[in-house]
Amino acid sequence: MLPAGPLPAPDAAPELVPASIAIVTDAWHPQTNGVVRTLSTTCEVLRGWGHQVTVISPEGYPSVPAPTYPEIRLALTAPGAVGRRLAKIAPDAVHIATEGPLGFAARRYCLRRKVPFTTAYHTQFPDYIARRTGLPARFFWPYIRWFHRPAQRIMVATETIRAQLREQGLTQLTHWSRGVDLACFSPDAPPPPEYAGLEGPILLYVGRVAVEKNIEAFLACPYPGTKVVVGDGPARASLAAKFPDALFLGKKTGVELAGCYAGAHVFVFPSRTDTFGLVMIEALACGTPVAAFPVPGPLDIVTSEVGAMHEDLTRAIDAARYCDRAACAAYGASFSWDAATRQFLTGLVALEEDEAVSLQTPDVF
Image 1 (cartoon, one colour):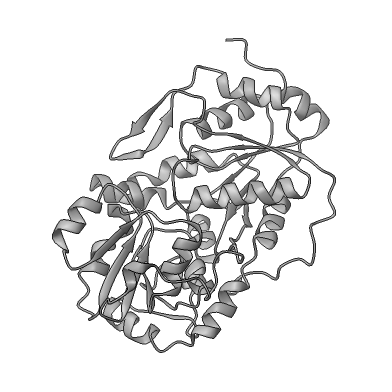
Image 2: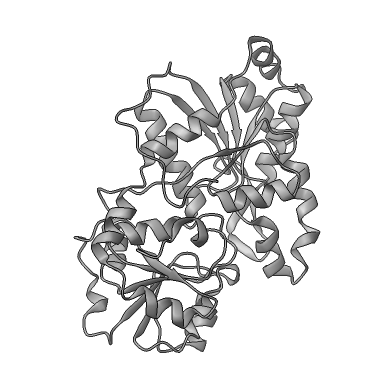
């Protein structure tokens, strides 16, 4: 079993022959979420190491808003369009990051040509859809099993998710952790002016403001102080109306976001549906302890030195307040994007010569 926390960071960029890598994803800019930040940062690191990375995303395709999730655009592609792009790119490796229309099209193309590919399980898709439809999560697991089963490897961020996918019969799993931009996220980030004069302690949530994030559990928590929500999403208006004492700051990025973390007393992570929770390690890198439910994500990241977990969120917040902020910052700083990207590279499957030739034979329709 992998221990909680990150793997050691490498001393330098890996000594690898530059490769051409195709990443197919339905989640991309201008979306703001952990999947997009993970993929975009991974691409930056790979390019910095000399690799050629091409992202096939909804950019350049007509799209429609996802039902109940309008910020996510579902690409509308002509038959064979994604395959023709893969054929033109002629990559050394194909990675399919999401289970949406583009990922489906890339999967179909690779399977028809017997070309190996890897996938990643970024999102608790069955739980997300269950929260939005009211249907049991078990109804959606057959699609996840079907989608990922042909992959040579499935990349997962934590041991808890690895165990969950094993229970679903998906065993070709490899570890891909996450990192923090330490040039941005640190305890020295200046708090936002909106924090001035707030009643303490300041309890912070950062992320999408959507039903599956379980933010209401945080806002309804009777712990004294001021609750702050950073982020945007479809549930913001209704939550702001229901909890008028909470402070909603909207979307923040970069140093402004780091200051929101650093100026808070506790970072509260109420989600029960995340596979990792990138915002938790960003908060920790800023010296802010984490309070969460004992569920996948927090179970793999939060230790008793840097936060607290409990089914009673009030008790978790109270315990987290006693954590040493210096220890939090040191722990958060140990998560390296270099180490995470090395894991991603290790998880890829290089195409053999005959597979590369097959991939470059596009559909004629």
